[in-house]
Image 1 (cartoon, rainbow, N blue to C red):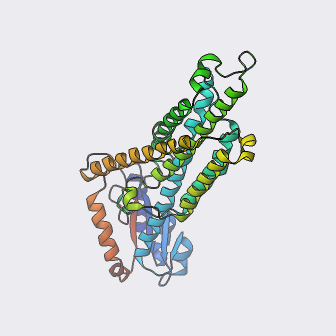
Image 2 (image 1 turned 90 degrees about the vertical axis):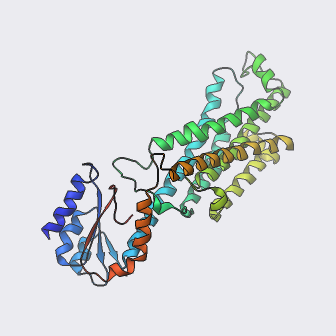
Image 3 (image 1 turned 120 degrees about the horizontal axis):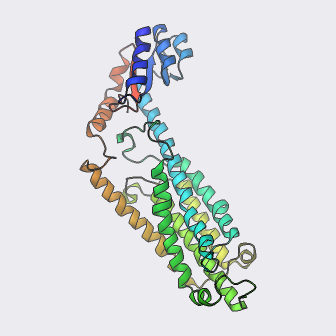
Length: 353
């Protein structure tokens, strides 16, 4: 028993160039109990495993099929990936939400009100973010190298760069373009800036500013739908992935309906500081949606090309992909062999993923 435990400890201390591997141990006997307890994840056999092994393990494999372990790892990766996507989507809108407040320092008329921010965050974004829990896996989810939790956090710097410096900036650009394209906004900025006691707005100017905030809000709604479409996959194209998540599709529809209500339903004008928009301006905001999705599709294509050539740090390991296929095919044969096995999730050559 001590030998098996020492092997697990060696992986945990010296694996991955001294950083330490994340180890899983499978076993069915009393002798496997110390190693099952030592490993980050102990997996005991449910059919032929002893009660001691089951008590020491974190997971009990009900069918004694090693392929089920791979399926469990895939489900865990999917949950982690979907949570990461939900975080990225939620953070995207923060840049265009903050930008109008900063712009007011330079005299730009208010482009987005607090009520409209709440309408986006609570009224629409929260339901779309929850819908990511039902997102199916991408085609090559298990072909990627495992994420080492000591090196790569779930919400790492890449999440911030993607949300704040990439998608968020694209949303911000299109929101400002649509805002300043509204008639009278540039003149108001040049003459009366943010208004106030010194330069009060006339009734016509108040309407123009409200229309400007409305088009900014509507463009941001379209930008968030584009962000949701973009973050549904990290590498796979939407043309092949399509729209399999019905919960997310319903959330998209709810976002559009609520946004159109804020534009065309009069009782929404007062609480959310919106105003009626001509239909041509409502249609113009769709440019933001299609442009962001197109730019993201180009990025994904470039990264897929680099991965195929193994020209970037996120390249897929061909040997690893082949090993996954072989492990799935030979899973039934492995079940005929009794004993235990140690695998390292996070190492350079993981056995199960």
